[in-house]
Image 1 (cartoon, rainbow, N blue to C red):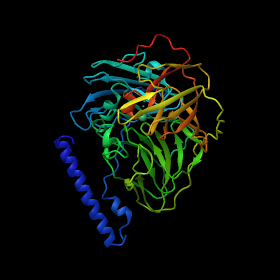
Image 2 (image 1 turned 180 degrees about the vertical axis):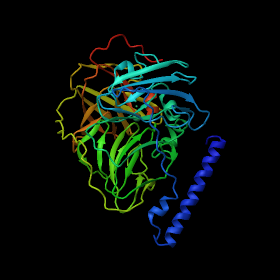
Image 3 (image 1 turned 120 degrees about the vertical axis):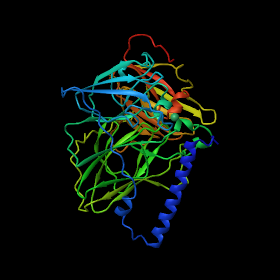
Image 4 (image 1 turned 90 degrees about the vertical axis):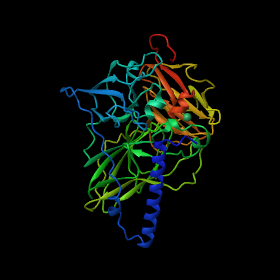
Length: 469
Ligand code: C2O
Ligand code: CU
C-alpha cells in the first residue's frame, strides 16, 4: 500500500465520486427504463480535448521545422512535458517532405527522441547503442525525410519508462496526398498516468492493471460530438507503458495500421492495441451515437472478470443517414507466404515474479547482435515462452506479419509493433532496407528496461557499439 499522498487521496476521492455517480446513473437509468437518449447523457461527459499541432517554422513546404523543449512541469502526475504541461504537439508532415525537430533539453536528466515506427537514419533514432543522449541544457536537431505515410509517435529512449510515463510523448502524422479529406480528423492518444509508480510485478502487475485511462491527457470517459452524415478519420495511439487497449464499438471500420493504409477495409470486432501500437479507423456518423468501450485486458491471457468500461461516447448533433466509407488509398497488397524456415529466432522469456526478462537468455545490453544484409527479407520467429503478452517492436525497419501460432492473418499486415500472446509464436518477414544497428524489444517499457531488448544490425553499420550507459 503506497503512502496516502494528497495525490492518492484526491484520486481515491475521484474514484469514489465516479463510482457514486455511476451507481446513481444506473439507478436513474433503471427508473426511467432507458428513456434517456444518449446525446443528452453525452453532454454530461467532458469533451475529449483536441491536441494542438506544432507550428512549422520553415515556409518551404518540403521542410517541416519544429521546435520542442523537454521540460519539468512540477506536476506529480505529469512531471515532464514537450508542451508547457500538456501532451506534445501533433507533428504533421506531408509524405516525401523532410522533418527537422530542434530539441532543447531543459530537463535535469539526459533525454533523446525516438520516432516510433519511422525509418530514420540510425543517428536520428534517439537510441544509445552507438550515439549519445542530449545532455541537460543541450540542443540537438533531429532531421530526416519521411518516406512512409502513417500514424507514428515520438518519445524518449533514455530512462524510457519514467520519461514516457511522465508525459514525454506526442503524435507524428505523415499525410498521404492520395488520402481523401474526411469531414473531421480526431487524434486520440491513450495513456495511463503514474504507471512507473506501479510495480510491474506483484498484484498490480497481474491482469488488467490499476489506474484509469486518459485520452489526450483527460480522464476517460469523455465525449465526442459529430454531425450526422459526417465521415471522421480517427487515429488511435496507445502510449501506455504497460496497458493494453481492447476497444469495441459497433461496426468497426479499420483502415490503417502501423505502416499506413491496409490492403483493404477490415471490419474486425475489436481493435487490440498493446503499448506503442496504432490503428486508424473511420466513423461514419448516422442517426445514433455509440460508445467506445474497453474490455479490461489480462497480460497473463484469458478473460478478465471486469466488465468493459466506456472510454468515449460519440454523440450526434444533427442525426442524418450515415455516409458511405471514404475512398481510402488501400494498397491491395497480397499476403506473402510463410516459408518453412527462419533466419532468426528470438525466444522471449522471463517472469513477473523475478522482474527479469530475456531474449534468447540474454539481457540488454549484454546481447548477441544478429546481422542481416541490407535489402534482405529475413524471416524472424519470435517464441513467447513466458506467461505474459509482449508487444514486439523493431526500430528503423518494418515487417509483415506472416503467421501467429500457425494462423495466417486475413490480409497483408505491415507493422512495427505487434502483440505476441502468452506462449504465442509470431513469424514475420523483415523489410531489412534501412542500414543501422536497431533496437528490437518488448514495448512494455519496464520489460525492456529489465532486459527484454536486443540489437539487430541491417548491413554493416560503421563504428563499434558503445554499449549502454
Ligand atoms: Cu517506441 Cu524502442 O520504442
Ligand atoms: Cu514484455
